[in-house]
Length: 114
Length: 113
Figure 1: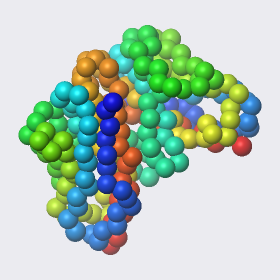
Figure 2: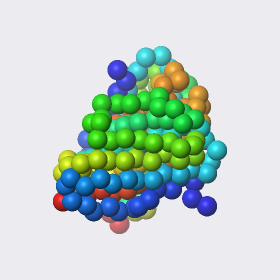
Figure 3: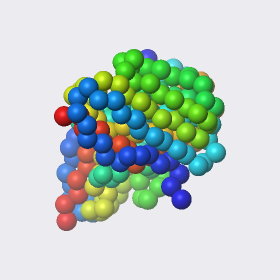
């Protein structure tokens, strides 16, 4: 069974549209994250939720809104998509206060805005 | 703030060559250090980690030693294979309850037969 699963794997959409990416983990972790990987492979954290509560919110446009209905799910909704939003978005999970254990990443969602 | 600096890529080596990818960090306190690997078209996988000074992380023939005196965590492998071709990321976590991972810029490694 996949530990951290993201859907969809690929997403092509037009500028101005609204889209969502879903993430689910079955590891029993209580902390989940969204990272953005740009075209140069640089990874930057966007959000982190611990047990459904937002704990990290980096400088991200408010067009991006995470939602965590329970600790196993963290979805990312993006309004009014722009060309610069094209990237690979990775979901990850970990156990809070066990940072030394590392994260488990999903396989990524490649978003292309045209 | 916390930061990770990796050697610039891309790196191209012949099969069975010795590999070193340099990584240095800046952090408050005693972070945990990680190497992640990203194979083409896939997500990141944890390769190895070290949680305190002088710890050595190892996996799949790769090794890295946590050097507090030089704030480094260089990745090494004695004999690389074509299947090691991937992007390698050094990362740290500050262990203060703020659980985010701070990544380096990644180093693309290509092994030629």
